[in-house]
Image (cartoon, rainbow, N blue to C red):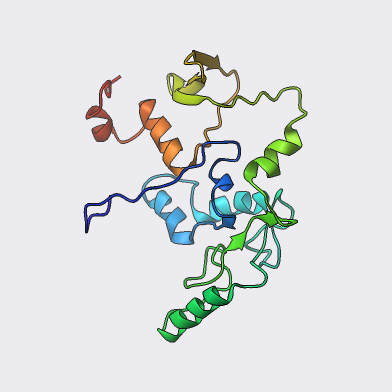
Length: 214
């Protein structure tokens, strides 16, 4: 919700294998240093830019970028658009004329300004996170991919996540118990929503919701 106008902006989310990387118009962009460091300021120790940089680099092979900030051996291949669209180039020239800085790599996390984002295009086709990670692991005997399912909540055993509940396309609710660990990767919106549905989040806000005190 925008405070100035009171209007809401539609936010498209990818509900399929590969998540929003399947609907991101084949653009790839990482966050800026202050965005991550703000998490540390809010109490999430270990989630700052320097903490996360090794993991972000591990995910990608960023062609033509600074290897100190960008990955060189990751499964997701990203690169600047070539050639640059003439209209977009004209826009960047315009913002420079207006006094705004140019950024060589907007996903490097350190520069401020306008510049071309990377694209996740390989051999002329979109490369989603499912193409990068899931396809390579598809033959593993310990992998079971469930599609057409909606996760409702995480199951908690004290302060440990012990499983989850999800609903299939037929309406059946299935509970899954996990002996080792649960990795929640549902995007910025989905991850936060699932945590709150599971009773994890700001206490004051949770108390406003049904069953918020459980």
